[in-house]
Structure formats: C-alpha cells, structure tokens
Amino acid sequence: MTTNSPPIGRLYGVGLGPGDPDLLTVKAVKILKAAPVVAYFAKKGRRGQARAILESWLSPASTELALLYPMTTERHFQDPVYVETLGAFYANAAEEIAGHLSAGRDVALVCEGDPLFYGSFMHLYVRLKDRFCVEVVPGVTGMSGCWSAAKLPITWGDDVLSVLPGTLGGPDLARLLGACDAAIIIKLGANLAKVRAAILEAGRSSTAIYVEHGTQAAERILPLDEKTDDLAPYFSMILIPGEGRRP
Image (cartoon, rainbow, N blue to C red; front, side, top):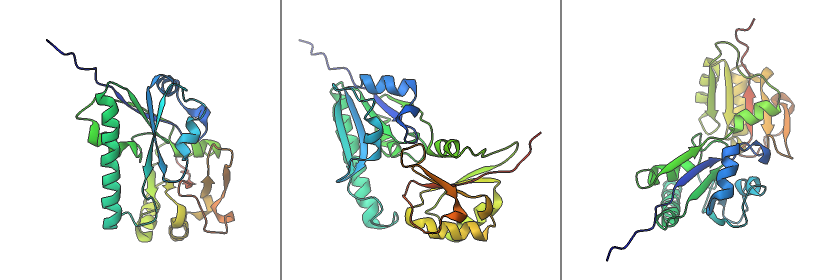
C-alpha cells in the first residue's frame, strides 16, 4: 500500500510596511487573509508592533504564532550571552515554523518594513530556505515611510544615500556622514546622544530631521536641533537629505 505524504507548505515573508496598516501591498493583504498560519515577532510580555499592524488584516480562521524574543536591547549585540540566546531563539522559531510547513500548512511570517532590509525574517529565512519553498513579499521600508511623512525629498540627481545603524561607533558614524550626500540613521534608542554628536562633528546637523513612530498615530517629526533630550524609541530615525543635481 502506498501512503501519500501531505503536501509541503510554503513560507511567505511578508513586509508590513512602516506602521500605517493601509501601507501594506495588495499582495501582502491577499496572503495574510489566506494563510492558515500567521507568525510575527514580539518582545516577551508585549503585544508587538507587527501584531498591531496586522489587526486590520488577520483572518479569524488563521492560527496566530507569536515568536517571542527572550531579550532585545538588554545586552550588547556582541555579548556572547546575547549571541547564544538569540541564536537559540531563531533556531527554535525556525523549527516551530518548519513543523507547520511539514504538515502542509502555509505560513506567513510577517516583518515590519521590508523582510530583507534589516528584517528579523532573514534569520529564519537562512535556516529554512534550503528545506522549503519561500516567497518574499516586499514592503514599504521604514525610511521610505518616514521621509514621505516628513515630506522630505531625500536624494536628487547623483546623490549617494547611506543607511547607517546608530549602533556603529561615533567615529565611524562621523566619518561615513562626512562621505555621503544623504543619510538615514536608524536604530536610535539609547544611541541618540552618540549619533547627535557624530552628526555635529560631520557638520550635518542643520538639515537633520528626527522622526519617531513615522506613519503612525503617535508620529513625531521635527528638526534634530529642536529635539533637546536624548530619549528616542529604538525604531526612530534621523533623515539627512541630499542637495544634489537638479534642473
């Protein structure tokens, strides 16, 4: 007697965009409404921003799979404990999703912004891509959402745009800021004071714009020079526009 194996499910990496639920693509919405399992990342003990964005689009028939980070910014990303803990978390999360896929259930693993641009999806993608069929659905990036919310033309003509993590060292940030035409500085949080000092050293503060919760109800946009404190959400960013060639 021949036993037919169940079909293998497909993994979808779905970009949720910068925060406004209306900024999901049509394709993303179609997949979310049809997927038997919808997985999302959140910090342990919290609902998470991805789940908040999903609220408008989740099907009641879908099984929700919350992947809860055991830690986020409590330790430095080079700390061996952080590396070991997060590595084990991603490995376990990949196997949990693999269980659904092996049972024939498609899984939509969502990610704020775009899945392949600093997205947590990538950590599971590299662990699953050789075992299962994967489709990636791009999303509006956080930086695109923020410069649109700020109504800030970011690059002109031949401008070179650099995307710089605020987790870099101050001297590296200042050097890179001095070598580019336009810049986006992400991952601020506790790094804001260091980032501000690097921007001042590079002589770029006069055009720097601070954005937090871009495209969301709590959105806040102001010149960096007018932000007098060093408190910032981790996913806030600073925009420095280029001034390049134009007619």
